[in-house]
Image (tube, rainbow, N blue to C red; front, side):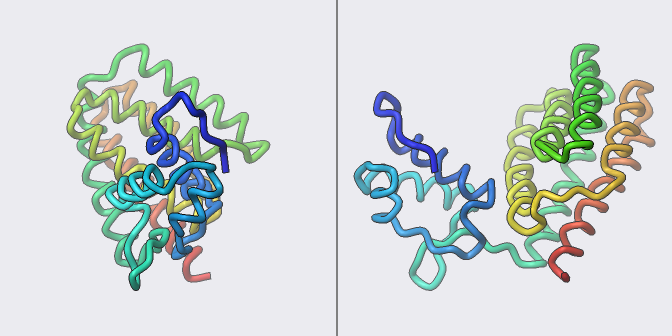
Length: 213
């Protein structure tokens, strides 16, 4: 767990530190979060930690369970509902991106795909690059409300992948990224929507497959 910088807001620092430990799998699903223990680890009072925990409950990464605060443990139904929302929202995002994407954003996608291919050989930072690819498309939609909604979904999908799948990716995901990019370049909305549906369905199947194991 990272340390505290005294010159910055303590509750925000605590929030980001705890969130990072959850997102990276350092804290496991259903693990109990004890306010006093976290405060002691960070070397700060319990007040900022209490506020950070409140913010993380709002994010959905922490929950009250049996009178205790615990790391969110998604059920199969939760996972299916989140991916259902993701599919609807990303379908809208890709449709808007077809109309609004800039040359600069297309260049960013091309660079992301190139870096992902290089990273694939070493199996490092794939999660960050995958998130970056989708975030570029979100921004290209030019719809701020949609971008905010997708950020919440993206966070939960990333958490599920790290905590329940171990960060693994199915083999064809980079090929699907390339096909999404090609559809954006060509302005082919039907093809882009078809691929994004398959891409998200494959992601859901990957998570559910690991749960069954």
